[in-house]
Length: 579
Image (cartoon, rainbow, N blue to C red; front, side, top):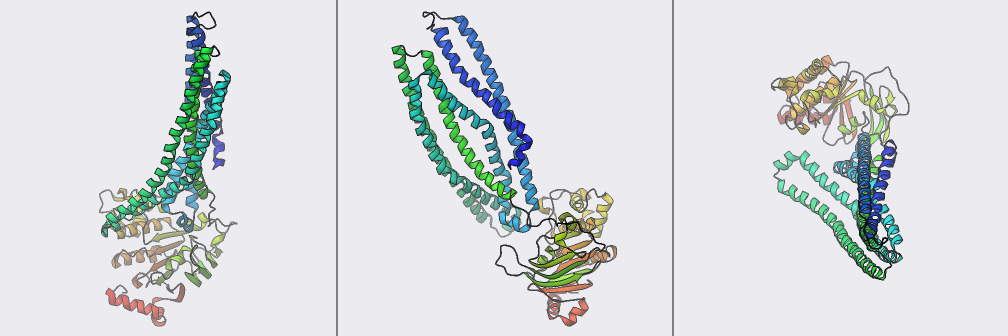
């Protein structure tokens, strides 16, 4: 994170410099007031005769000092905020950029709620730390040590009082900080839990309502929030004890200094102006100690947040670009060579076991299997959402690990069963497939995907707004928008991962007819659970328990594959889906 500071070094330098100017003016003022009281008002050095001219001239100087200190403080605040805001902005962007580079296994490792907390709240805590570091810390330390020095110069006995009381205060502050420090990391984790519950319930609102689980989820959120509040209260209780105790000790020191001052004035060893200056300096020292305690709290919490952000920034992407430039004259060929796969972080159980399969350019290839058989896992290896545990996946005769990720994924268009739509218009959702696509291209893709059937019925057509996660559209409508987006990309390889499951058979048949004629040179992989979706494919691979049990045309499989026949017969009896 600190590499991002280089761009804002001038602000990092100017903010504390101007703060030094402000504090210097604060430390000068009590001395000036001493002169006004002792010489201007009481005339202690002029036989008891006051000096109005001195009062006016010194008063004007004090006004100038106050204005100069105020201007320095304002400029310090401006530069501190310019630094902290810009640095936080850079960190937030860097973290989000890194999250976008994560593979699925890394995103699962952190959880969505935790990533949201880190990129929002943790960055804010670090921003507060940055502001306090270049502004608050400079101010408090200068007031603390500068005030002690000034009190020491006024009278030796005043300094002795401070040196007796301040160690007690500092030890007390450090004790409370050390007790509170471990809670800050816990506090952020509790905030992760709250965000996770919110994220899950917003995303799964329909399921919550359908199963009448509102009260259950309210209680779950309440429990997560209670844990957060209880942790926060434990921290606040510690600081609630610390501040009054520090005030009591420092106020006792103030009483002692006033008492000593009265004795010294009566003995003629000190002046009233010196006592006033000493009291003012002590007040400033007291304020600096309390503020320093608050800054330590900010530092502790900011440090905990900084560690969490560094966990993101230091997490190297598991899926990286290939090491060399690759070129091939083949377009759309896919090959699996002895591929096995087990999900990272699992128990090592193979989801895919020794897959050997070749899909030729322009071929329509179906993949059929029961839920959990490994169909989606298999195609996730093609665009390198995961890397094979063993063996190799080749695209256009080149190992996918040798490609730059952008180059590889630009060859592939994917439409999923759960269509991910964004909170914008239908047209802009489709245009994700191709930047700067023309209106005609978008409409053509929507037409091919059979989406114009419902888009044309909407008053705003392609400009119709889509609610978050596509909630304003039906399942079939969302799938057709996602298919249109994939078709618009005009990629070499087109993957439908059960992306027609919500379409009726008539609409699905129209779609496949378009694919077989207009996209005949595109390699098409169709993953499905119903035979009607794949029976027209050139070849169909039947997967069972992570292995390919047979591969061939519909007719061949009906003759040679018992699993395929069983699926066909069960679907036929279930309502004719196999036809």
